[in-house]
Structure formats: structure tokens, C-alpha cells
Length: 203
Length: 336
Image (cartoon, one colour):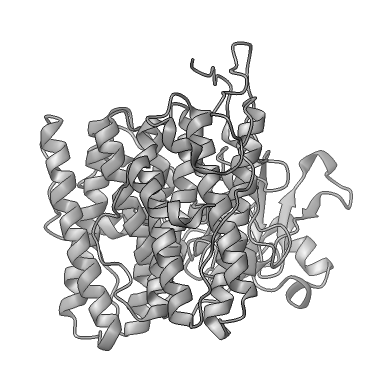
């Protein structure tokens, strides 16, 4: 089943939603038994429609936003580290909001925030290293999913989010004193690969 | 073309309006290249850009050639700065690595063009690069170039038909953005990036890079007024050479911009420099960040003027936008 996305324009996406033209819109796609932000998406790859791709993205964005908040609240970061991580967390929340609203406007049912197992981390290096891995996974997830997106405005929006995730990874490596941009191309991950990476953190 | 979307509320991160892609112009990085003024150009006039007309990317081959033109530009720029001797330490390492990336991008995109049956655009024999004499200048300049690169790829991505080419373009685009962010971090710029990347149209990219591609594309500074506004904010952001001030026009060498006519009257009558600061663009015609409709506008350090001829003769003829110079600069620098 494909969504008719005629009349979608980026201005409406800008308001956190998509303008939808006409009938033939897909109603909520059953993603499986659960609509929580659990790893349901992995069961549905490759994605059948844009709502599924967006719910995949939303699952990861909820995860990232929550991780950022948890790590920021844990108080192991100071100064510039803290400043950057706080900002990145806000940006992830903006991503959550935008993707969720888009799914709703498309007539889909957004996944809800999941339940996570976050490790207790004691040093700035541990915190930043974890965020680096998670962000890199996020970039790879978007890159691996881009080819499934049918609607061009959704693609544009997803790419604009992915770009910021890529910036996050580079800046986190910069904070760690690592080579900030090690590759000429950022790596892509399939949903299965993403699942393997993030599964330990999902209850 | 993208609107200038400004953050809603300090400290809340940038708003979803960042997604706005309707017509408008991001102040081109060109404004900050320090190139004086710019006349109209078409894509066809610019050496190395194989587009029949500016702003037309129809096929994957068009897009790939456009990308290849930019990659050659970056590759050549990096080679020049890496040989210049002005870089040192960690920053020199970054430049070396990023330059290698751009060369890899040239090879990859060249491959794409060939696979699509095209004859790859070549690196130009000569470019019109600015003279960079300090490391700081180099970092600032390259930050802008990389932002244009990231914005160009982001703008073109939805137009790409082949999924494989899309994947490659998206991966390259991510790296351009990473380069830009690292340069900004090196400069210790306050805010690393907005929540959403900004796409650029071909017009906006051309406005930024044409002066680098073509020495003849930078004319003596032409100022723009309400009556004769610049066609886009990208053009309006470019510095203009000094002109003699009159009652009708004031030129400010401090920011290399002029204010004239209706806007000058308003500026003078309402506190001038103290209230609004210096002009930081020329007058231009473009969509307002407020309602997206086209108006003649001009940015000052502390305000944006918007011309409303429907209220001519009243005090509503010139209206203020809610934007200040910091937000404009934030947008010019990709949100920092």
C-alpha cells in the first residue's frame, strides 16, 4: 500500500507536519503488536511505505533524545562538552517532534517512546564515546533507509536530520580529541545492522 | 529556495520551520567571501558548469556534473591551502585529511558521471581563489565553502532518481557537513549547528561559488535600493564598493553596504546607527521570514526592514522584521 503524497510541500513539513492532498491516504499501518518505540521496525524491513521508514527514524530519535537527556542529567559533563551535548539533545528532541508530527499528519500512528537500558557511565570519555557510537549508528540508519523513502519532501526532511546527526558525530569526536572526520563517506547500515547495534539498550 | 528561517526562542534549539523549503534565499556564503559585489550571471557563462541554464537540474547526469564541479573546486582549494604554508598543528592535519576526502569525492563523482554516459567536467585550469594569509582566514573561508557543499547536496538530493547515486550523494553530503562543523568548532563559534540542515538551490550555490570559478564574474560593487533591489539575498549579502554618499544614499565603509531612499529615510528618522546598526546587506527582493511573501527587504545589524508599498505615505511603509544580525549570521554560517 502506498501513500498518496500529492500536495506535500516542505512548508507544511516545516510546521512539523505534511500537507496531504486528496484521498487515498494510508491509514495507520500496523507495525506489529506494539507501538512502543521498541525494535518493531526490524521486523518490517525493507520498509513498505514512508510511515514505516518514519517510525523507524522515530524509534531511533526517541532513543537518542532520551539518551542525551539521561547523560546530561547524570552530571559527568562540564564546560564545552556539556554545552555541546545539551544542544545536541535539544536538536534530537526537535527531530522527535518533527518526525512524530509528520507520521500523524500522514495518518499513521507514531511509535511511542521506548524503555531503555542505559549503562552507568563515570567519565566524560565514556559518555562521549557512547554518544559517538549512537550518533554514528543514527547517521548510518538514515543513510541505509534513504533509498526506501518514496515521497521527495520526506526524503529532504530525513536528509536534513541525517546531516545534523553527522555533524554531531564529528563534533563529539572533536571533543574526544579523535580525528573528527575519519571517512570520505559516512557508512550506511541496514536496519538489521542497526538493530544489532542498539538492541542492548532496549528493554 | 529556502527561506531564512530563524530560531524561535533563544536556547530552545531551532524550530521545525527549518524545514521550510519554499522560495527564498539563504544569505549566500558568498557574502562572507569578501568578494565585492556581483552581477547577474547564468550558469552557462561560468566555465566548468555544464548546465544549459542556471537553476535547472533535470537528470542525474546534470546533478552529478554539478556536484563534480563543486568537488573539483574544493579539491583545488584544499590543494592550494595545503601547499600555502599558513596552516599548522592539528588544524593542518584536518585540512590535509579533508582535502583527501574531497579528492576521493572527485574520483567517486567522476565515476558516477562516466557510468551515466557523460563526459566528466574537468578541474579548471585556473580558479579565482581569494588570497588567504592566515590560518584563521583559511578556516573561516573553508567553513563557508563546506557549508555551501553540504547545502548543495542537500538541495539536490530529492531530485536524484537512482537510489545508488542518492546513497553516494547522501554519504558525501554528510562529510561536507562534518567538515563545516569541525571548522566552526576550530573557530570556537558559539553554536555548532541548527537542528535541521539547510538545503540550497542551484541559484544559491551558484551565487556563492561563481566568483571562485570565474574571475570575470565579480564586477565593481553595485549597490541595490528599494527601487532596484538585488534579485536574491545571496546577491544582496555581497559587499559593494564604496559609492559617494548623498541625501538619498548613504554608504557605510564599516560594513561595505549602502542604504538608500525609503529605507534610508526610515533609518535616519528612527535612530539610525544607534537603533539599527549598520546595513549588512543591500536591499533585495525575496520572501519574508514572517509570511513567506516577497517583499523588498534589507538587513541591518539589529533589524530587518521590509518595504510595504501598499502603505506608502504612512508609517507602515517600512516595517521591521523580528530578526537581528546575530540570527542572520547564524543562518549564513549554517546556524552557528
